[in-house]
Image (tube, rainbow, N blue to C red):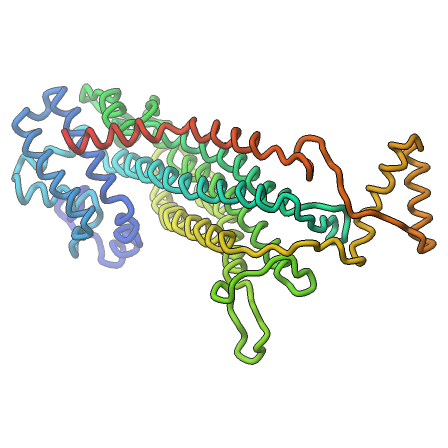
Length: 444
């Protein structure tokens, strides 16, 4: 069964090729398709395209389908093209001609658009909750280990003293910027395309403002042509936001792999969180972080993959857009898995103390000694030259006590400021109002 089918069948090979993985991808969209239909039929009743009694019948059956989906008992039957066809088929079986009325005033194009936006909005909310968990842990670890010094590197060469407080806090603040881009993607996603039909509107007097309110959207995609053009663009913007989070996790994972290495030896983990070797009994491999790094590096390619799939498409709908679901939908599971595993690993991290007491790190303190001379009145260039000569002559003397007090330094992490920035950006999401609107739609 196909919503567009008339009196002739496509060649089987054509049918298989064009459907592709759509049925599999529709499992992500099932509940959102029903939510969209619940809002759509309320709108149809408001403009008298269906009667009140028909609205009651359709609402009851759609809610039954929604319950099946939530229980995991819903599936797309063999020979049925997609989620939209399956829902309409179930309604028609139960309600006859009344079930056929549900598609009035919409196209499968704007139905898919709506489902995708509802799905993306939901996934961004779920992702944000995972980001918040990791952010809170990073701030906690930063405060807990703020006095433990760590070598800082440039060009992978020893440079200046750092600290675990700075290290954990740096990735916490990175997540703040990632949250900003995710919120921007959420705002673009949270606009209602329903009513754009095939991309050119409808001769029915659709009330698009009503469906916007019923589904908890912030606003409409007003221009019906742009509503369709937004497909591909929305996915690319969301993918970019995901890739930013992935970049943060990948870099943290690489640090962890280095710091666990015996030549560094700054951190360790319980045996059950690392893996061994089949022939080397001493090995404690950072497999979890290596896989986080690999998966997140793959996610950083996602915006470009989506851009290449949609490059040079003119306005209007094109079947190329179907392929975006295969790229983007599983990416949410991947990034959330990586966030959860990063949280698990860092929850159990063991941090070494007194690392910089080892004499091999003595030149990390060269800038400290230069600055002491400058504070005593010596011009910086003279102080730099004096300490450089002492190093060359093997006469360099240093102290491991570090007193950095400016904003964001070892002695003044400003974690409270970073946390405030995170919370400010988190508050810009309207998750509560969206949840309330959808719950009201289900309960009405």
